Length: 111
Image 1 (spheres, rainbow, N blue to C red):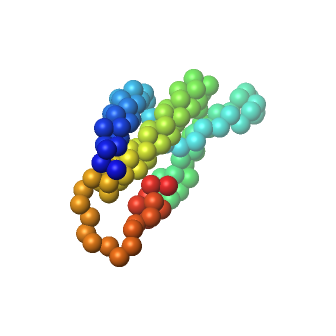
Image 2: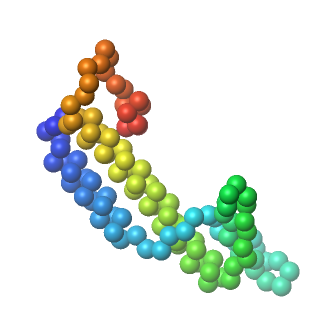
């Protein structure tokens, strides 16, 4: 497994570069609720301390937030992959305590 270390390091470096290219980010969801009374209705929804907060948006705000939310989701996915890879390197290269049975991929969070 240690022979894969250079490959894992390259993969981790690519993930770090992806993080560097992330634009604006935001949590939540945006919706185009279609035409309502007086024109289109765009909405941003998110949770704050367990409560749902909704904010009306202009078309420009909707487009901007939609991209920011997409960026946030990509960022979360990249961080999740970085965590998985970090655990893989840890358990493959750092000495383990003696174990009766081998740890599975699910236990290690690799799948």
